[in-house]
Length: 347
Image (tube, rainbow, N blue to C red; front, side):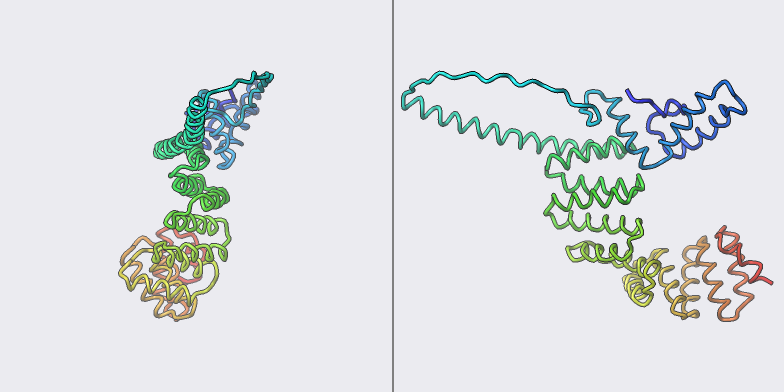
């Protein structure tokens, strides 16, 4: 059994990082040597538990080990494998058989070989599908360590669910564990396994989003285009590439074309409208930018950045009074940049 850091912090197994941090703050105050000098060992254990469980990547690995420890019937890759001795070989006696027996023997050997080859394949296929379903169940329960383990089994067994397991595992690493590098690795692994275009398109899409999260904007754009070429939804790809061009690559004209194309299809979202207004502001079309910011605010009245950047365009055009009102509104909505310029704008 490994040390149960969750018990050290007084938490249930697999508690969230926020729960870990809250428990640590309470226990650190309680057992700090200045307050409780006789509990220095407890204070050290609390610090050790927090150092592991408050780090997303360390916590994911620790949760996987703990899961194996709590489920001893499941094969544990962290335990050393038992060593077995091979039996000595023995000689054989030579026999003579009739032709009929030889024919029966040939059919028997063929049948045995078919069973030996086909049996494990069928078992592996079934086991992989079962592991995938188990992974979905654990993920729905927010038990990410067990979900990751089952998805890895589904990939390993090369079943009909291997591609889907790679997709789910990549999403889990990106969206639930905030581990974009792991998401990229599992997406690449899935691309090695699957030949299904819909699955390959999804894996390229997830890989591109993970690269975007990891700060690899140019590579992310290239991978998004690969996903588009093999059939991924064009509007989703154009939105993501537009966001990359607008906010990471400074390709405002190209991004503007993509946002306008999406809006022309009556696909309206907060980030698309903001993206269009942002691009117009960056290419110094401030009157058009203000018009789009107003459309954004009308549909999404609590969008603090919308008021803030609208105020900047108004200030550029010399409308100080309206700019002051916009910056004040952004400040009321707790947009942090507004508080830094409100005194300058509203003289």
